Length: 68
Image 1: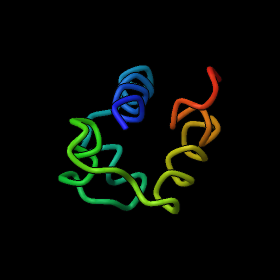
Image 2: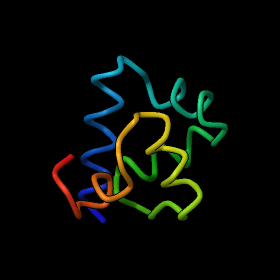
Image 3: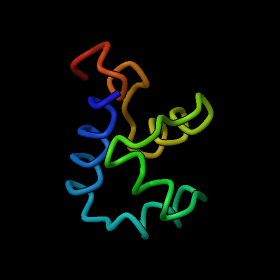
C-alpha cells in the first residue's frame, strides 16, 4: 500500500503537521503514523476513514483508487 504512505505524507506535509502532531489529532500513536508513512504496515478500515475525514479526502484517494 505504498500509495497510502505517499499520500499520507503529502497531506501531512501540506497541512504543516509533524507525525506527532497528526497522531495527537487523530488519536493514534506517533509510532503508528510513522509506520504508515514508511509503508511498514497498513491502516485498518477505521483508521483509513479517520485519516480521510481529517484531511477531507476519500478513502479511495488514500488507497490509490482515485486521483482525488
